[in-house]
Length: 188
Image (cartoon, rainbow, N blue to C red; front, side, top):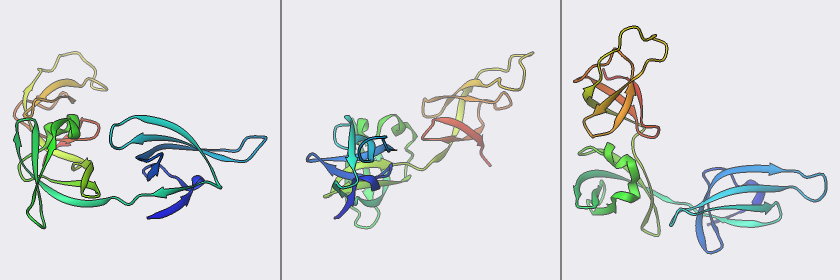
Protein backbone atom coordinates (compact mmCIF):
# COMPACT_ATOMS: atom_id res chain seq x y z
CA UNK A 1 0.00 0.00 0.00
CA UNK A 2 1.25 3.44 -0.86
CA UNK A 3 1.18 6.53 1.31
CA UNK A 4 0.39 9.79 -0.49
CA UNK A 5 0.31 13.39 0.70
CA UNK A 6 -3.06 15.03 1.31
CA UNK A 7 -2.58 17.45 -1.59
CA UNK A 8 -2.04 14.53 -4.05
CA UNK A 9 -5.55 13.09 -3.64
CA UNK A 10 -7.37 13.11 -7.00
CA UNK A 11 -10.98 12.22 -7.94
CA UNK A 12 -11.33 8.45 -8.26
CA UNK A 13 -8.57 7.68 -5.73
CA UNK A 14 -9.55 5.14 -3.06
CA UNK A 15 -8.09 5.95 0.35
CA UNK A 16 -8.25 4.56 3.87
CA UNK A 17 -9.48 7.26 6.27
CA UNK A 18 -10.85 6.96 9.82
CA UNK A 19 -10.82 3.16 9.52
CA UNK A 20 -13.00 3.06 6.39
CA UNK A 21 -12.60 2.87 2.63
CA UNK A 22 -13.43 6.11 0.82
CA UNK A 23 -13.38 7.19 -2.81
CA UNK A 24 -12.56 10.81 -3.66
CA UNK A 25 -15.52 12.22 -5.61
CA UNK A 26 -14.38 15.85 -5.94
CA UNK A 27 -11.24 17.73 -4.93
CA UNK A 28 -10.53 21.44 -4.63
CA UNK A 29 -7.10 22.93 -3.87
CA UNK A 30 -7.48 25.98 -1.64
CA UNK A 31 -4.79 28.59 -0.91
CA UNK A 32 -6.19 30.99 1.68
CA UNK A 33 -4.61 34.42 2.22
CA UNK A 34 -3.57 33.36 5.72
CA UNK A 35 -2.25 29.93 6.68
CA UNK A 36 -1.15 26.97 4.61
CA UNK A 37 -2.77 25.55 1.52
CA UNK A 38 -5.04 22.54 1.80
CA UNK A 39 -7.01 20.11 -0.35
CA UNK A 40 -10.81 20.13 0.23
CA UNK A 41 -11.95 16.59 -0.66
CA UNK A 42 -15.48 15.23 -0.97
CA UNK A 43 -15.33 11.55 0.01
CA UNK A 44 -17.88 8.77 -0.45
CA UNK A 45 -17.77 5.64 1.70
CA UNK A 46 -17.45 2.53 -0.49
CA UNK A 47 -19.23 0.27 2.00
CA UNK A 48 -22.32 2.23 3.09
CA UNK A 49 -22.37 5.18 0.64
CA UNK A 50 -22.20 8.01 3.20
CA UNK A 51 -20.51 11.24 2.14
CA UNK A 52 -17.96 13.35 3.98
CA UNK A 53 -16.10 16.60 3.31
CA UNK A 54 -12.56 16.57 4.64
CA UNK A 55 -9.58 18.94 4.56
CA UNK A 56 -6.14 17.47 3.95
CA UNK A 57 -3.01 19.57 4.43
CA UNK A 58 0.01 18.79 2.27
CA UNK A 59 1.93 17.57 5.35
CA UNK A 60 -0.73 14.91 6.13
CA UNK A 61 -0.38 11.47 4.56
CA UNK A 62 -3.12 8.99 3.72
CA UNK A 63 -3.07 5.36 2.66
CA UNK A 64 -3.94 4.95 -1.03
CA UNK A 65 -5.70 1.62 -1.63
CA UNK A 66 -5.27 -0.43 -4.77
CA UNK A 67 -8.41 -2.32 -5.69
CA UNK A 68 -8.14 -5.59 -7.58
CA UNK A 69 -10.16 -5.58 -10.79
CA UNK A 70 -11.49 -8.86 -12.17
CA UNK A 71 -13.58 -9.64 -15.21
CA UNK A 72 -16.80 -11.53 -14.60
CA UNK A 73 -19.46 -12.84 -16.96
CA UNK A 74 -23.14 -12.28 -16.06
CA UNK A 75 -24.99 -15.59 -15.85
CA UNK A 76 -28.53 -15.16 -14.46
CA UNK A 77 -30.83 -13.59 -11.89
CA UNK A 78 -31.80 -15.61 -8.83
CA UNK A 79 -34.39 -13.88 -6.62
CA UNK A 80 -32.80 -10.66 -5.35
CA UNK A 81 -29.31 -11.81 -6.34
CA UNK A 82 -27.41 -11.56 -9.62
CA UNK A 83 -24.99 -14.40 -10.37
CA UNK A 84 -21.66 -13.73 -12.09
CA UNK A 85 -18.84 -16.11 -13.05
CA UNK A 86 -15.10 -15.42 -12.80
CA UNK A 87 -13.77 -15.89 -16.33
CA UNK A 88 -10.45 -17.35 -15.10
CA UNK A 89 -11.33 -19.61 -12.16
CA UNK A 90 -15.00 -20.28 -13.12
CA UNK A 91 -16.04 -19.51 -9.52
CA UNK A 92 -19.46 -17.94 -9.11
CA UNK A 93 -20.13 -14.65 -7.33
CA UNK A 94 -23.56 -13.51 -6.11
CA UNK A 95 -24.26 -9.79 -5.79
CA UNK A 96 -27.48 -8.22 -4.52
CA UNK A 97 -29.53 -6.25 -7.06
CA UNK A 98 -29.31 -3.06 -4.98
CA UNK A 99 -25.46 -3.34 -5.08
CA UNK A 100 -25.62 -2.97 -8.87
CA UNK A 101 -28.46 -0.42 -8.69
CA UNK A 102 -30.71 0.76 -11.53
CA UNK A 103 -28.20 -0.36 -14.12
CA UNK A 104 -28.97 -4.03 -13.31
CA UNK A 105 -31.72 -3.79 -15.95
CA UNK A 106 -28.99 -3.50 -18.62
CA UNK A 107 -27.38 -6.85 -17.75
CA UNK A 108 -27.63 -9.38 -20.59
CA UNK A 109 -26.69 -13.08 -20.66
CA UNK A 110 -22.92 -13.49 -21.04
CA UNK A 111 -22.23 -9.74 -20.64
CA UNK A 112 -18.71 -9.00 -19.38
CA UNK A 113 -18.49 -6.72 -16.33
CA UNK A 114 -15.56 -5.57 -14.20
CA UNK A 115 -15.86 -6.05 -10.44
CA UNK A 116 -13.55 -4.14 -8.08
CA UNK A 117 -12.48 -6.23 -5.09
CA UNK A 118 -10.80 -5.32 -1.82
CA UNK A 119 -9.63 -8.32 0.25
CA UNK A 120 -11.75 -10.59 -2.01
CA UNK A 121 -14.84 -8.51 -1.15
CA UNK A 122 -16.77 -6.76 -3.96
CA UNK A 123 -16.65 -2.97 -3.65
CA UNK A 124 -17.86 -1.75 -7.05
CA UNK A 125 -19.03 -2.95 -10.45
CA UNK A 126 -18.76 -1.38 -13.89
CA UNK A 127 -20.88 -2.39 -16.86
CA UNK A 128 -20.04 -1.71 -20.50
CA UNK A 129 -20.63 1.98 -21.28
CA UNK A 130 -23.06 1.17 -24.09
CA UNK A 131 -25.51 -1.68 -24.81
CA UNK A 132 -27.74 -2.47 -27.77
CA UNK A 133 -31.45 -2.95 -27.00
CA UNK A 134 -34.68 -3.31 -28.97
CA UNK A 135 -37.52 -0.80 -28.64
CA UNK A 136 -40.79 -2.55 -27.78
CA UNK A 137 -43.01 0.51 -27.72
CA UNK A 138 -42.57 4.02 -29.19
CA UNK A 139 -45.06 6.89 -29.30
CA UNK A 140 -46.06 8.08 -32.78
CA UNK A 141 -44.56 11.33 -34.08
CA UNK A 142 -46.69 14.40 -33.47
CA UNK A 143 -46.95 16.42 -36.70
CA UNK A 144 -45.95 20.04 -36.48
CA UNK A 145 -43.32 19.57 -33.78
CA UNK A 146 -40.01 21.14 -34.61
CA UNK A 147 -37.26 18.66 -35.35
CA UNK A 148 -34.77 20.52 -33.17
CA UNK A 149 -35.58 18.98 -29.81
CA UNK A 150 -38.66 16.84 -30.31
CA UNK A 151 -37.57 13.66 -28.59
CA UNK A 152 -40.33 11.17 -27.79
CA UNK A 153 -40.55 8.51 -25.04
CA UNK A 154 -39.85 4.88 -25.93
CA UNK A 155 -39.96 1.66 -23.90
CA UNK A 156 -36.99 -0.71 -24.20
CA UNK A 157 -37.09 -4.52 -24.01
CA UNK A 158 -35.73 -4.39 -20.43
CA UNK A 159 -38.56 -2.11 -19.21
CA UNK A 160 -36.51 1.10 -19.10
CA UNK A 161 -37.93 4.28 -20.69
CA UNK A 162 -35.65 6.56 -22.73
CA UNK A 163 -36.18 9.56 -24.97
CA UNK A 164 -35.47 8.89 -28.67
CA UNK A 165 -35.55 11.03 -31.85
CA UNK A 166 -38.83 11.03 -33.83
CA UNK A 167 -37.46 8.82 -36.67
CA UNK A 168 -36.99 5.83 -34.31
CA UNK A 169 -39.91 3.38 -34.30
CA UNK A 170 -40.98 0.27 -32.41
CA UNK A 171 -38.93 -2.87 -33.19
CA UNK A 172 -35.69 -1.00 -34.00
CA UNK A 173 -32.42 -1.65 -32.19
CA UNK A 174 -30.69 1.32 -30.56
CA UNK A 175 -27.50 1.87 -28.57
CA UNK A 176 -28.08 3.15 -25.00
CA UNK A 177 -25.55 4.73 -22.61
CA UNK A 178 -25.70 2.66 -19.38
CA UNK A 179 -24.30 5.46 -17.19
CA UNK A 180 -26.63 8.28 -18.27
CA UNK A 181 -29.48 5.96 -19.41
CA UNK A 182 -29.83 7.91 -22.65
CA UNK A 183 -30.19 7.20 -26.38
CA UNK A 184 -26.85 7.29 -28.26
CA UNK A 185 -27.58 6.17 -31.85
CA UNK A 186 -29.25 3.56 -34.02
CA UNK A 187 -27.62 0.14 -33.84
CA UNK A 188 -25.79 -1.01 -37.00
